[in-house]
Image (tube, rainbow, N blue to C red; front, side, top):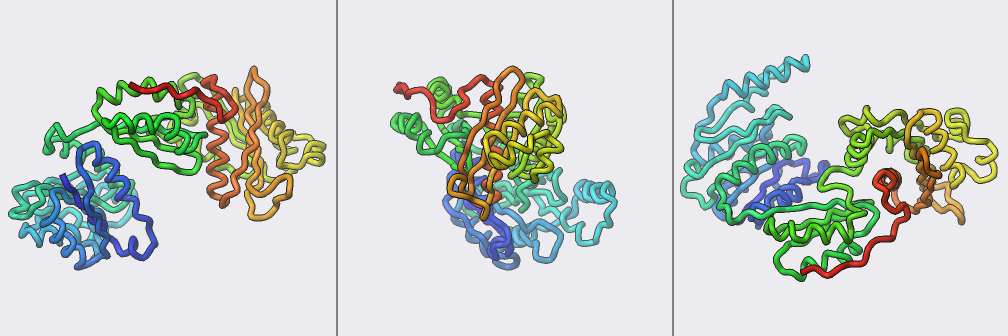
Length: 425
């Protein structure tokens, strides 16, 4: 089945907002046997109706994103209703929910907000607990003589669209699409290994089988290894995948910090952090995970040398002899954080984010990550991430989280190891 995505919003075409919808929708639709054949991005206003009219006549399945809000330029709902000759009627249940939402937040509700409760006749409302604008599903009877058999109008903000898609659109697609079109998708999230290494170790062998779709998505410090195919084939290949790249797999979809927090909670362990160059980013990633309060005891941001001495007990002599960006100081920071907090584990980061401050021995991008653990000698990784400051921080904190993950699971702490690659049947 051929699908078309219409992304609406002048902010997308002005470069003010990054359009992430296409990648997300394509990834979710592929296991349903649906291919996105075309994607169109149009500004607010009349172009929305023009794009809808063209899409409904050339595609089997059409999705729109955005244009469901209360302002005058949000006309996707009205454009679709006008195009299909469907009267708009107020939905009192939606309107009551919007009023309750504003009342809970203590905000006044402008008159125009109510237009989000207008529903075209014959359509199905897709609830939106994360916003005020519901989504809408147009089934075949209301699409008349158009080629498209299904039309979905979805909100623009990703935090609203994605839960709606999972909770309401996917179940609808499963009900209307033939069962033979569906395949299973598995995603293995890895860290500490590059996508080319994953391909070399296992990906090429799986592609040679001919019964699986293999894909990769690389991000700083991480790789998503994606397989789509019959459930039985995926189950058959699972053991070989785990045997070859299992030590680098940290989850089947959850973020690295969530996987680490889950491990800590499962084993009833605690952690603290001591950060210099990452400025609290490591603690921030951990505390973004629900339930982190059960395992995260303390985070110390000791950016200056005096803070390292006074807060963590780092000896002034170490700082004077080796400098703040050094293995001995990283060790002292981690051990100090564990001692002060009483945590089972403590992670530290100290490095040169740049763009200045580098030397020949320690160029910009150099960073030390240390892990102090009860019952084990403190371990340190020296890493090199010569990137912008934001990416540098992300990759440094990922290295720290992976070090902790490996310690908890009893995996090798030195990267670059791994098993040889057995052939797959």
